[in-house]
Image 1 (tube, rainbow, N blue to C red):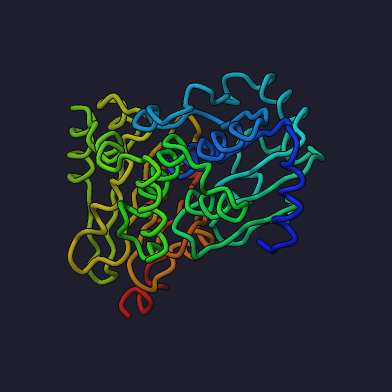
Image 2: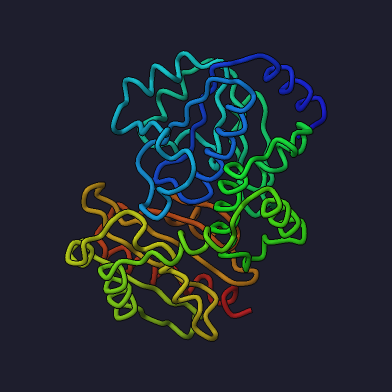
Length: 338
């Protein structure tokens, strides 16, 4: 983000505004963490702020400070629409195209107010008046930290802000193990701890809250795991029936795709999850090294994301989706075996 942009944004924020913060459908730790981190910061500057999510987030995130203030569009679309229409300024966080906002897309697309995009995904759209886009960043949460830094307000970071930002960086870096984790990321984390983020408690609240049904579902996922050695690929399937039998709740399959990627010699891992309610197969892709799952998902499964982590979808049956996936792999044999 250019110095001129920061100066203009500082001008916009110099007096109280009605501000809306929006993130993507099925919000994850980075989406919720960045939204609430920015929420707490802007509230401290005397702005009237509302966070709106297209739908609910996983249960393991619901302890994050400020969670009870979030307005969910699918539960109260009329109030959410009124907030958007009355906004002086709208931040869109952790997505870069209105289509990622689900049923909110048409509302956002017709809104004429000033948008500020903060996001680390590839190929950003051009709807925002101010765009802070950096695909090299570990997370949108790290970008929120740097955004506050650019505003010369790091001293305004409270324990609540630090906690929210820490959550998103931790979850989007796979607990600081992904390639996007840089020395700067660790310096940011250190400063967040100094500002009151309790790293041990945050980790426990996110990762050590398994239910018996989720552990059982993980067992089903492992049982369904298949390996295709000639393509250094592993994939998992979960049907709607299997989800229902194990009391599936949003977020229960978080991290399952990494089980395939943890197998020695595997560079490409996928999980296919049937969602009969939305009539789609939800797909998560992960990779190691130079194989781009962002490119793969964009080319074949209406998705995208990052170089080593992306998502996609399919509108055909679970079995047909897997069959399609397997039929595509020969085209990528050389790339997968480099």
